[in-house]
Image 1 (tube, rainbow, N blue to C red):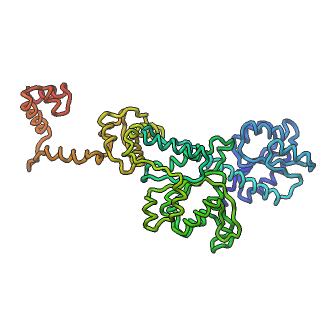
Image 2 (cartoon, rainbow, N blue to C red):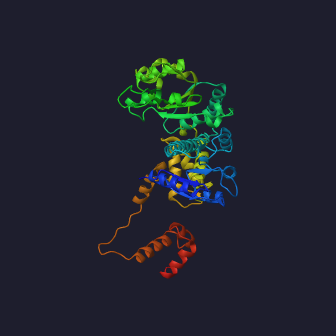
Image 3 (cartoon, rainbow, N blue to C red):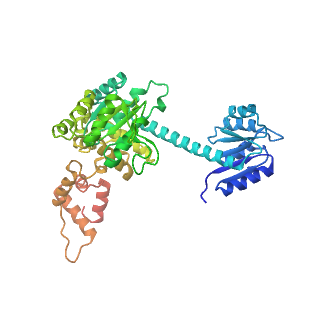
Length: 465
């Protein structure tokens, strides 16, 4: 049987906790027993249980309530169930006031213990998942749209004005990889940052092309039990889940026409109806729609509803390509160098050679910021460098690969049928260099890309001086 959780049992009655331990072990739990309060807090924290069953009256030493208070000070994140022989309401209130998740009266029904324990463990796991998602979303929402070019500053200023004004639907357009989703997160931050409960304000993103056509409607609007074959329970859609916060609809330009009509209704009436449902549910959601398609042309071609387009286009933001904001390329490159150096535990690189800067600025970046990000990430992972140089960058950037090929064409050695010693090749190259420079060793060394001392040593070795 799989381990269902780690349960710590603390009671001065050895008979009770032994019986409880055996029962819980049969249910698949791992148990640890203690019948004294001596060093109990240290032992409990060291074992890291998923739940604690703690007797209120432990005889000599600190009481169960005292231990509970000490555990709370330690910052425990597992539920505590108090065991008590006193069935008065006062005893229960005291236990709950001290931070207990639940309490059980002695003598207790073992089935009741199992039910309470199962419920508390499920709730504890859900809280952990929610906490993780909040922390993850906070980290994600912390990402700032980077750019100092006039074009981007205008975009950011307009976005902030819309967010602070409380605009409830926005359309963000731009080529793939230009930063639409990052800008959407910034909009959410500016829209709700002044709320006291900002951290709990939902931000939910859904890609309109990531799910099959048969599932996307249920994801958006939810469904009621029995509305179709696999609808075993009621399910909330993302509109309901995002109630009070932001819903990002990515790649909205690829949404089917039928769904576009239902989306328009939700935007205008601020209500949704689950699949198979009979009532309209009010939702207070800020909608951010993103697309890399030309929606105006899609309307002309009959692939996008005109009324939905004009509804969304009231507050539209277009993000320029990276090629249109050359001033931001080096700024972004340095940001990614720092970011990935931290991620991969590499030495931080703060310098970019002049030649590399020129290459980065002149490259057209068809994949926009995403392509730049990927290029810098590869450089950080694959190279050990103090300065980002041209040699670190991919060969196909800026025609480097073609230039190298041309250079190789201009320099070809013919290998004799019977072969040749490398030292002979080296000696001949040095002789040719001296011949071309009229025996100037400094210029000869430069031609062969070696130091003066190395060239002089080799020249003496081959009797070329």
